Length: 419
Image 1 (cartoon, helix red, strand yellow):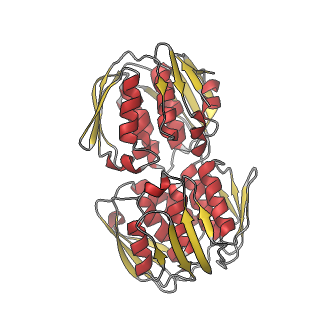
Image 2 (cartoon, rainbow, N blue to C red):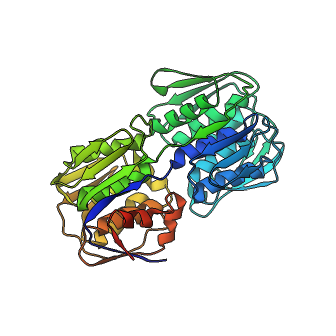
Image 3 (cartoon, rainbow, N blue to C red):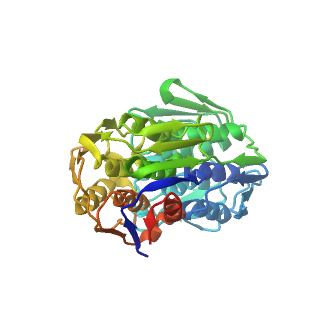
């Protein structure tokens, strides 16, 4: 599918899609809960459907509809032999750990991109806690499950916060008290906070050490949560808010002002760049102004980097986005992909070591964009297309279904010319 984006004057209001990260965590906790959990306002996208199917693969009935319903059965898990995570890294990490609790053997696999992403540290940690996982540090993995013994484990905080989240959830069902030591530097802390928040809603007992350096998890816990509500997603809203910042004015509703989501930082970043930011009880409105370059540490907000690169092309001066190394291990090498595709549009952008540098304000031109099968590259280049002369063609535009299936429709609602 090809989507064509034209230079546009943005003006309108749209509701944020539900949070993908929170939906994943709700599904994982519900999978090992004591009874049925109704997940209200879930995000239905390729990734979250992969997590629902993972529940079914472990003998836990999971239904999708307006709400998701996961029929937890007290962690009586029985593997049917295969979990296909498709392209979802979160599904792969969370359900590799949960599979250690399931009777039988489970093969964990995924698509070509996912099979390149690291899993070795998580496998080592699970095996030290009584799990039986074999593989070569990446998918596919074979898990011989029954239970996790628990105990003490140390894991790096710099490779993926999802490793920590996976351990936190699965170890609530371990045979003895567990302690996780997280080795610094610890990146993407907000995603660990979302996991702790989800576990709290399920009544789990987890003690947290200073600065997330360690966690203590009580054994054999019974997770319970009749209804779980998912808030709006700042990661997806960031693209629509950025559209307002470079091409007019955009309001996004359904956002929690007290959210623990790390990508809530987009509001402060847009303000620092000079955009007009109006926050209200459950919405945010962004209006364009003369944007200026910034110097930014992206270690806790990697998902914002592609759209921030698009924004920086329209900001006066040199923007430097630091600590971007983990972007090379996403659905694509996002550093290489965003540099290559924005350069096609006339952007002055380059990767320098562990940073990306963008010089603005640049006159962009429409180009044919290859998103490298990466939803965030496709959406970021579409936002850049709103400020570009001519036609911006996004090839393989259906890749946005991984996280934001309604992205192009939402962009049209706020005035973007999309065909």
